Length: 93
Image (tube, rainbow, N blue to C red):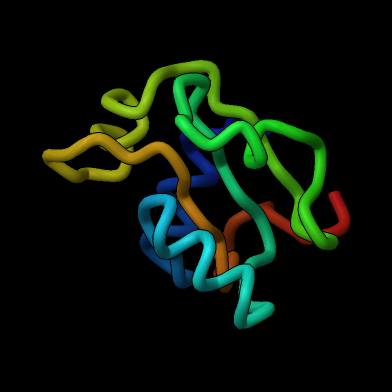
């Protein structure tokens, strides 16, 4: 799976949240399906394999690169996929 291509597709056709605060809120509300986590994410809890049945996909770049891929002018350490849209992201991958 091409992570960058699928992330862009999820952003265009699905529903995503940006940042640690939004990731934590989505986790509390049981909305999160997948977390994409930059390698320099400050929260070590997001660097494992899974959190409460939410798949974690490590992004090999830093938060600045992740923000740029998402079309944002700021750093993003975690992208939360709530609705994968037409992308290949699935909770059970």
